[in-house]
Length: 213
Ligand SMILES: [Zn+2]
Image (tube, rainbow, N blue to C red; front, side, top):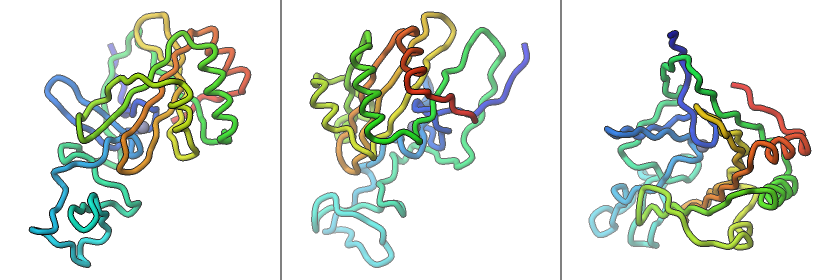
């Protein structure tokens, strides 16, 4: 079998620039999806007062706890995450495995995204909400939330994805959803699953285009 070199992708389809390597399993994230906010990076004012050299920083607790941020005002990921702006390479054996297909969403207006989400929920066979609360856990947890509640968190800054999830074995499924990207708050993820037929109807209806790398 012949090996092909590919880049690791984030779950959302973007090139991964952060990796978190564990013995059993490695995780790869793009700059937007990587979990940020490591309490190890918190500085306490009684021991460590911020100086001009520490700019940019933000207050975690006003005049008590502060932390360094990047030029976009975002906290840094956990210290175990490695960064590589060129991404991370992998060699894959050619096999029956079919890659996921990611669709471009950048051209869609907020209103169009809203319509697609509502349409997807109506035709889905499964949907759920996950939360990532970095103060509690490094991994996502499923939570009970109504569709109205999660949709009220959808805004223009959210990371919106449309993916045809494939793999080794059929049935494949369509995945539509978003994650919230509010700094210093819990991150919410909405996952909506559609069977192939419903997914392709939606792709056709909104004239969605596959993303090219
Ligand atoms: Zn991502």
